[in-house]
Amino acid sequence: MTLLMHIKEAFANLKSAKLRSFLAILGILVGTGSVVAMVSGGQLATQHALEQFHHLGTNLLAVSIFAKSQGGSSQSKGTIDLEDTYHMEQKHAEITLIAPYTTVYLPVSFAGKKVSSNIIGVTGSLQDIVKIDMKQGRFISDLDKYSSFAVIGDTIAKQLKALGITNPTQMQMSLGNNIFTIVGVAAPWPENAFFNQDINKSVLIPLEMAPHLSGYAQISNLVMLLDENAKINPLQQSIEIEIKAINPNIRLFVRSAKQLIKSMVSQQRTLTWLLALIGSISLLVGGIGVMNIMLVSVVERRREIGIRMAVGAKRKEIQWLFLIESITLTLFGGCIGVLLGILTSYIICIFAGWHFKVFLLPPVIGFVISVAIGIFFGSYPAYKASRLDPIETLRAD
Image (cartoon, rainbow, N blue to C red):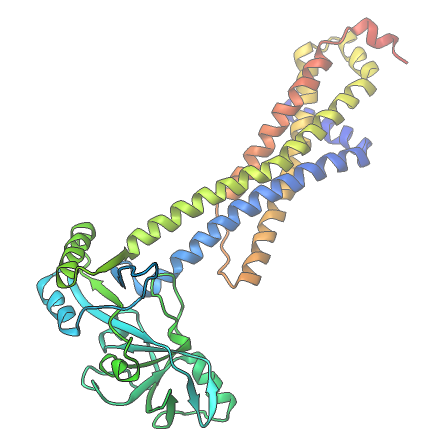
């Protein structure tokens, strides 16, 4: 018999036992769908994480500065000066731009109404490093220095719009007991895992003004834009040595965008395969169901097997008959499971707000696993069918 004839006969046999075939297909469908959805979901999560860096680029370096623990506690406040950061930029040719910044914790209000926001003391170079576009007005300039000027993020602008303010530039807002004039509104900024603050929810003021609002406002973070050919590891070590030479009573946490991407991809890959292994448990259960159904089929078709052997069918042909039937069963369930898994990952993207993309790996894994399950769990029933005694099978009722 040809392969095509075996496949046609397999479909005919499966069709004759619709409910039993459906239950077997359902087990493979759920298992394959789980594996495909988990692998695809992991790849989509990785893609979403990497997309965060498409806006900023990967040639970035960040330094967080902390005071060493004192009395069992650690305060996050920097102890280097603005001039030290400028000197660092001039010393290292690999550093294209450097942006020191700090955070201030004070209540923010507009026209007597409280506004939920963060306050960040920044320099003008931050705009170019973290790619802040302006919707209205301008960004903080290095010339502003001790001026009471502020730039607000998109989320804060929406809060003001709810109060009826469509263009807040040149209007005033309160930061604690201080009055600042809004000189710009930032466009929506895509939040990412590299920069510690969310620009959308922040009020940006000149870095030199921050200590006048709070005595604890010192430079606690540096963000650097590096040359494309910069060697990150040597530069990172050099910066650590230089900052600790300025003040040894601090500890640093240095991270680069490239290192962060590498770590994220590695973690996501590990998580993806872990989830795939968990989903494979469903496939194992489905495979056992297929074996059970094929064994029942062998028992029910003993007379048919005997007749085939009596008219000249070889044991190998009998074995292939049941093996192809098993593979057909699992492959059919696997194909539907692949579609179900892709649909599930699409739904996940809708709720998570990710960009959906069909990857080649999950469907290939689903297809290969379906065939493997059919071969593995169908081999024993097929072998058992081929080993039956023709005379004994013809005597069966």
